[in-house]
Image 1: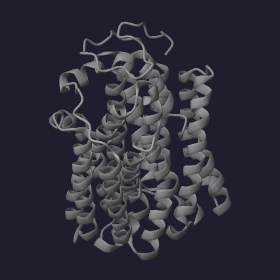
Image 2: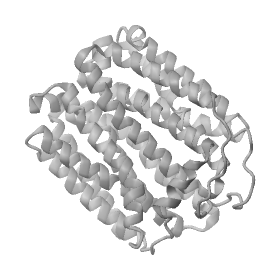
Image 3: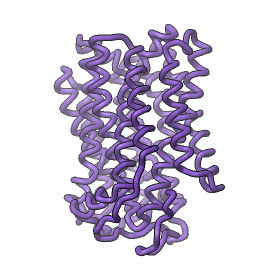
Length: 403
């Protein structure tokens, strides 16, 4: 997988930039002399643009070679992050973060399109796993280190670190990744036609609600939540992010193993959402000091790792001929939810305490659980089939009814 590792480095840079901001918001608020609720629009702009750009720009750039597109995307992404580090005001910052989010949504499908052409079909699963590991590593190591840099020498320096990682990824891709041509790309009509299947749509709704609560309301404002509940300083935040990242990494590995051994994805999802709801409700009271906060963060990181994987697993079983499309739409649903949650969280925080954030998140997770439990079968969509993944089912295979 030596030829795909540089692509994973690019994914690491995307993930680092997407999640590092939660620990930098207090510093940005002080720098721009605005409230934390106002500066949260930086996260909203990035995630909203990321969610919309993936399906739209994937069609617009379909004729470009995948390696070339990946390099173009990273170059613009680096420029947007450099502009972010130099932003003189909040509104300039929001504009350049929208640009960064939009182009960030282009890189992921470009990297995946490159990887699947570089390896034989029997190794495509490993290739995709290698690329997506970049996101996992960015959460476990990159985000805490980036936040540490931000708290020690300022949020602008942290963004320059992101620029450096992007440039390093560009050099590695240019040198070690062979050129590949463009891949067949479904049009917008085909991409959204799968939502005509009620089984697909309901899982998009669950992911959207989860994004609002988990990523938008909680993760975005985690520094303030920990400060209010346990007196955790911003400088100590990297330790807690590291705990959450490691717990999430372990939980993700265990979830995948359990699914392979026959655990019902619906039961896993329901259990995980229930656990997340309980943890969020108890967060302001259970995380009453530094040690207790570490325990709560550990449980939280482990629980959230069991949400996205069973959703993806269910979708791949329901419409195996449209795997690439539904996974892309699921990611868009997550980022749309994150954008909406950050905006909602800013409004909640402006008029209430961080306890209201976690309780609002709890209510939304409970709603997601109810939607998931009420899942009904839907008619199969009439969309042009996308290329099935390696080892996938033929187009006309029947999806299990209990998916």
